[in-house]
Structures are given as C-alpha cells and as structure tokens.
Length: 307
Image (cartoon, rainbow, N blue to C red):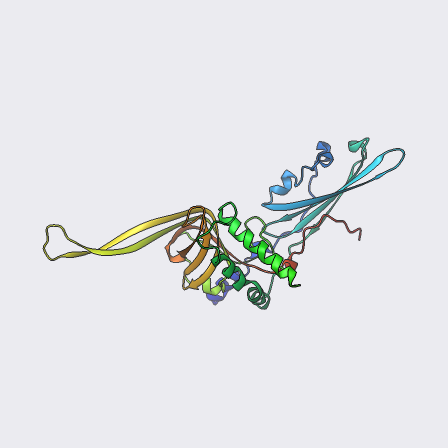
C-alpha cells in the first residue's frame, strides 16, 4: 500500500468533517416551555452537546376570536460538520403545554469539494485574504483578538465581492473558517514533516492552532570560553511558544514552515508577522482551512418546507 497517498487523502479530506450518521430526533423537552420565551432557549443542551454550533429562529402567529396560534421555527448548524437541524413548534397561546406539537428535519453535511473546486476557491479568495491581512500589519483590528482579524477580513471582502456581483467568501463560524484541508496532531517534534505540501496548503489559507507548544532552538554569536585563551564557544539559545487557541492567516509556505500574519500573538493586541515550523511543534493540534464561497453551505435560514 502506498502510505503517502493515504496521508494525502486524510490531509485533504478529513473524514470527521463530512461524515455524520443520520441524526435521530432530539428530545425537545417541550415540558420546559422553552419555545415560549423571547428569545427562545435554543439550541437545546442536547444539541450543544454535539459540538460548537450557530443558530437562528423565526416567529409568526395567527389570531382569531378564540385564541392566538403561535409558530416558532428554529435552525441550528454544527460548526464542524455543517449539518443542519430545523425544528417547528406550534401551540395555542392560552394553553402551551396542552396544545404544543413539534416537528424536526435533519439536513446532512454538504458534499466534499473536489481538488478542482478547492483550487478555484483559492484563486478567487486566497490572494485577497493574504493581501488584506498584510495591509493591517502594525495596527490593531477591532478588539485586538486573533479571531477578529480573520472575521474582519472575511466580512470586508464579502462586502466587496457582493458589490461587484461576485460570490462572497464564507464567513467564519466559530473556529471553522471554510473547508478543512489539513487536520493533524503533533505528539513529537518532526512527526508531521511534509504534510503542508501533501495538503496543498497555500497563501491565503487560515490556520488554527490548539494547545500548541513550539520549542525553538536559536543560534547566538560565539562567546569566549572563560579562562581559556583563544577559545570560542558557539552560542545557542531557545524559546518556547505556547498557544491555547490561536488563529492566523497564512501568507507563505516553505517546507514545514508557515509564515503568518496574526493578531495578539507576536505583538500583544496588535497585528504582526510570525513563523511556525511544524518540525518544532512538540504537541498540540493544527487545522488549516481553505476559504470557499458561501454557496457551499448556504445561508442558515429558519424556514420550513412542507414537502
């Protein structure tokens, strides 16, 4: 078996992001009357337990001489799988628990993108994202957090693309910034060599680091050996970079090294340039996203099709 091809497939198309068993109906806990609150207590705890998610809702009602019929439609999308569940709840205002009915619909994850589609997405958005990020070096974007740099870049570019009638880039959903092209864990230094090339990581992709520890050995100027005339000793130093959750824009790739524009990293509360070498990564997780068009997942809308 060609193991390099197996690594290539895992790097480009992480299965966990696009395989989700058919979702069973949730226990909607209607007895708590969460649907009567404004705003409704949604997503439900059982939904949040599946992972990070975003949601929206919509109300409408009908009134007659006897009572008011209310309808609530909620939609939730999970950040990792992009799968969607919609819930429609209907009840009489005078007797919510005695009249409530509910329906659920579950939409699976969107189809994986081909290499050709990922290449087209990079041509559409990659250079513009990297250039936008580079233009902010030396400044502070928004609240100075790392994630804000990514969010603001995508929001600004989306507005520009729409003005010119182009498909806008998909806006970040939590710590998901498009289509995942690489997902790896670093148990020991050097264990992930070559994966940036296998996953075709490029300028303009977004990198997400979690619980990462980089141990960096640096060279220093030679120093005289005390008490030994004419002898010099080659100097060496080291530094450690630890990142609990960190997001940055990749602006260059050289072997196992990514050059990034980041906020609140090398410059506290500001935008600067840093490099991360996977060969120096002792532990942690790395995920790289390719920014793609918003049509891949579509807008999250709280509507209901009776078909």
